[in-house]
Image 1 (cartoon, rainbow, N blue to C red):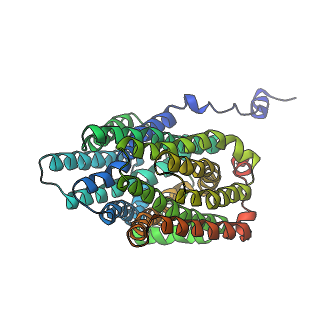
Image 2: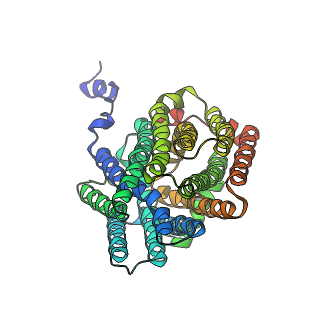
Image 3: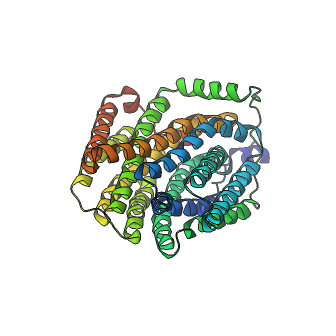
Length: 422
């Protein structure tokens, strides 16, 4: 005869509470949303401020290069810190550092003592703080979200980013039109609000049963690289994402600078980023359903071939709203592929390694974000807008061919299968 203990053990575990009632996830999501909203507001404002102070298109691209380069160089140490320090402390330090740096930039420029050098220095600080925040956020997410809900959480985080790109650049353009320092003041305030929100976050304890890593920063980098090298599907998709990010980030800056040089109003230039973000939001809303309907191979094929078909339109459509719609079309295709790849990476990585892996991957992604605008700025000044668009088209075309032929992409596992596994 079954005992009460036997019957209790035989009962299925209760379903996890929905994400809407997960306090820690919602605090983390909200803090990140506020911070990204401010950061997206300065995305357009940085190059516009450089140009307004008498700088060139190349100098405008150097600011974006500085943000990406500092983020790349800080990625591995940031990942090691996220695996060794209290992750809440790292998040708080990153937001406080960003708030102080942006506030000082606004003050120095307002009093006439800040020029291109000051903007460049703040861009470096922002890149480092972004690396700290991003790697720690990624390492912390699987600890606050049940395994079965991780894919949905990743998709919602993608929607958060694109929602910020809808509101942020347009708001930044409007604020810049009122006073050119307002976008930077707004980001400083946003980072302070994020800091306050994170004060209420309760970080869960680390999982037991995992050996403590004793290696230093260099050892952390090596272990992250070894893990990446041993996972062929992850390695291949990281390469695809890096090249895609390089070409797309360069294309975005080129479109913004071309619109600025053509005399488009600040609000219309801000609308380029807003439209791009709107496409990403729609794609992120569709991603939870599409990631169950599409294989990872199909999602990556749709993204790369779609970009190769849409980007050449930037050479013929009017600058401003029309070019923003083209970029929105590319952004619409990205969230499903991104959610599939990111969920897989989080599920197969042990907690003690998540920060380091995020840091190693952050090197490639941040380097692409840095080199893309720099290469785009050089091509724009030396070859012109049409030639730059054609170069980007060629890159997307080659990338689509690689995805079509890569065996590792064809066999990439569905995250749903991993979510169901214990």
